[in-house]
Length: 389
Image 1: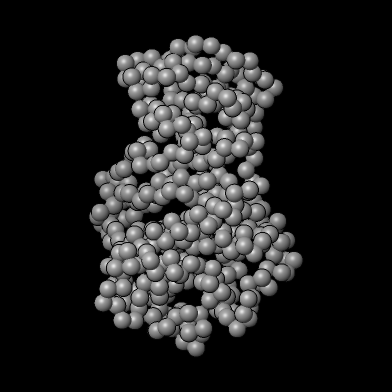
Image 2: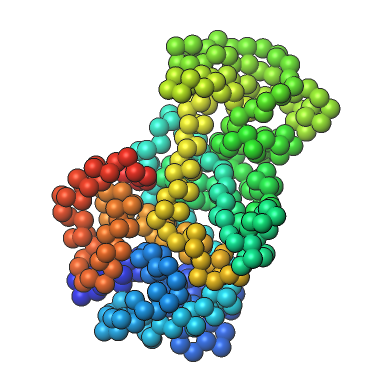
């Protein structure tokens, strides 16, 4: 790595800018633009995400305070908050959403043998959930949620081997989670793990017909008949493993095939959980372990909310909000790619903190993490949210 480049410039070399330019051309993003093009906008917004800047004025002041370093960091003109605000309002957020779709396959390939996946299966496994980002309804009137509250929902599907998001859909807070099941394309043989808020028998049957498997929790008061039972190892917390058929006019019509019902008691919390799945070959304990892995998507949501700027926004329009969230996703994917390519043995959180502190230093990235005290820091704060360690 060229020691004459700033850390920020080195980070930007990991991005496939040729693919980004194709995304820009797809939506005509640089139409009538002379100086502050989409690439410059992307870099400024990524800088704001990595350094956790709170406002457009904050971004402008910090960058223009060091004009001698801007060129070496890749910026070709002075940054003005009015120009950045106009770009965020008017340039199509789908440019950055499409670019995230370019980064996702690269990141997934690097983490396909992730050692943190603790379930002994060869199938692909995905977790589906959503997170709400609360907004002020008077400032964001398009983000309908409650009578006096606004919100944006990020419906997300992550690959549990590496905690890489593979599908993200942004909606207002009124969109029910279960509707997202209609937009997914299901991979035959893969497991889709979700909580009981996604229980819609008609949609679950579509997953079944597409050759994929689902694991979810049964709703209370579910009406069913038991057809048969299998032996279980009660020493592992399993209570029963049954083949069932749904009763009731609509449930039986929406899901006419048989289901597998597994009852399990978690020894750590003493909670009793009831799982539904259409997989009859996997061991019952594997089904419970898959659901436990679903917790990774909660960690993903908490990580991006704590380490990236997606709760305070630089603009109030739908376009500006969606654009900022998608660029935050690109930053997350970029950090994951860099960690894997450089074989760094520290958490993403430590990485983001180090980059934020030395963003304009002219030090090779590898040398930033060669010190042993960083490893001690990761261990010392091991109770905090850690991904990819």
